Figure: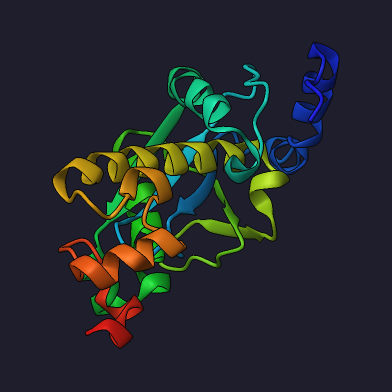
Length: 214
């Protein structure tokens, strides 16, 4: 993939500011993008992030975190934290996912992200969320299909969630060796299933995702 020029990066950033500009024009200054990482894996937490970007400060190179290289995500991670007006990151563990299901666990993490933004004094005027309709926040919610590739705020949240979760799973690799968590991050790869057959489930595996292996 060809590297974009500075001008192309700026143009893309402006294109991905379409939703933010709509609400800024309505006088809403605090626009939170929300996304998650880890709904599909067999192990580990689901992680949600909320991010309020500063409209006057561009963070070039934002995109759906899955489209970015690991190197690019790792470079954007501290930049987003430094330049955002506010952000929050919340994890919900495997045992809770088993108890309330993955969608409800994802929404639980997202709601807690919003509460943390409020507690920090940055109550959003609108929530832009990647394809999830979130109730219970008292704030207008705008679900956007493929939002992490269409909104800079959601893209920033996507990177925060993805990198945080990758770091968590890499740490778990040393706690529960043999599963390959650092490599596959808990997703259902061939090597992961092989390790499960040999070692059984670890404490961070989602029992509800692996009922057949009980």
